Length: 160
Image (cartoon, rainbow, N blue to C red):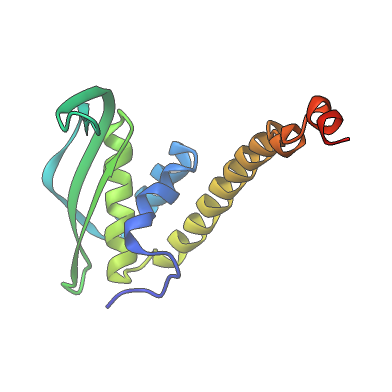
């Protein structure tokens, strides 16, 4: 059984990462009080290499390193229902990845506490929309209209 949310599950970690880490951890702790949480893989953090392919030479190269944290958990209710959750985030906090994995499992399983996770997804979406609006405003402020350069004064004089 899954809860109804209008956000795809693949977007849940990104939306939760947009919030303050303390808020996400507190929500996961509240949910975990009523559930049994077991790590399927130990939460880890480290660096990952960003690999790209050169378009001209078709050779792989590494652009650089980025922080990466991941966690995978199984959550079980007192009546035996079970769901798995996972998170892989561009962050160096394994505890945050574990909290997001717990919320992922709670929401996916429709477990007690899932009604508190949906508003967090909404808040994360609003935060990301504000960031996107700010970026659009910056882009609009730096927009250059090159159509004014289409004809120069010299070209207009040549036509006469």
